[in-house]
Amino acid sequence: MKLFPKLVVVALSLAGLSAQAAELRVLAHSSFSVDKPLLAAFEKQTGAKVSIIKAGDAGEMVNKLILTKGSPIADVVFGLDNSLIGKAEQAGALSPLPGELARGGKVSLPGAAAVDYGYVTLNYDKAWFAKNKLPLPKTLNDLTQPAYKNLLVVENPATSSPGLAFLSATIHALGEDKAFALWGKLRDNGLKVSKGWTEAYYTDFSKNGGGRPIVVSYATSPAAEVFYSKDKPADAPTGNLLLPGTVFRQVEGAALVKGGKEPKLAQQFIAFLRSDAVQKDIPTRMWMYPAMDNIPLDPVYKHAEQPAAHDTPDSATLAAKQRAWVGRWTRVVLKSGQ
Image 1 (cartoon, rainbow, N blue to C red):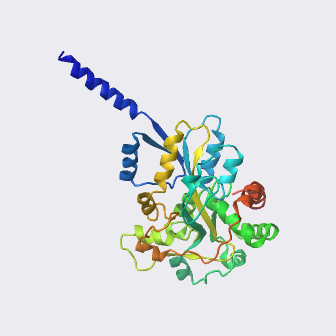
Image 2: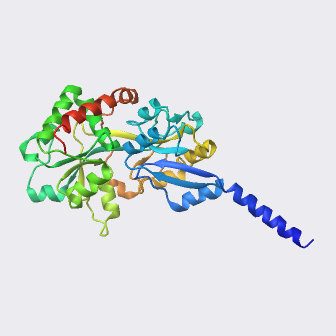
Image 3: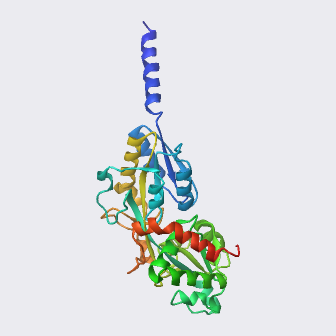
């Protein structure tokens, strides 16, 4: 009889282990980050273990999502944006999302639940331009002139969502033929192409030791520079070049992976990403604006600019055209190699 309580304890322990055995696999781009205590609270509430699978830039992530659709490696995907979700949908890699999960908020993303948004644009290194006494360019065409030779680095649109966003903005503003003529001139003027945002910003951008003082990044990047600076300068060391044809409004979201093993947990995780706690965490963690309403921003966002206008094609156009655009861009820009 004395053994009975021990057997009950063992049985309950095994039951607890079984209940906690569920694993939620989250496929995300390399910039995805959630506060660890918030993630731990989600795990405690659901009894699940969350495994984050980072797959490089968003473009690389979507390629991996598509390549593994026959045997899905995740249950939910975060980081799909309005330039990439059409590609994932056309490949049959996503499952329909219950409507209630995507309702509300300041922005929307067809096929997914919007989680955050931001603006892809050109950043410049203020110290470099001051030292070299070079005026800032006022148009995209200025960047094709000899004075700006070898100054610009962009991300490859075949592997990078900021790269694809920037390409799309130029096309939306100029039309395809004029845009690709511009890209040819940029190539001839010493354009550098990096694989993704991390390489472009932290390796090639002059602010971080590289040789290029103009980079495709985000309108919030100057605010991030101040936030992470030890001396908290009154002014950001970088600025935005909000030139016509260089601003793309990027909406990021989360979606269900078709064939995922834990669809209910995946839905709970999407709701978690849109909760007030996570939304408040996003601005100074992933440097995007929260998608939901009435979320306060950190004061450092005074160094970020929400552009008054942007050149963003609609999702249907992006889905229909982007493959051809990337192919043509590759022929025009990379024909002589990098």
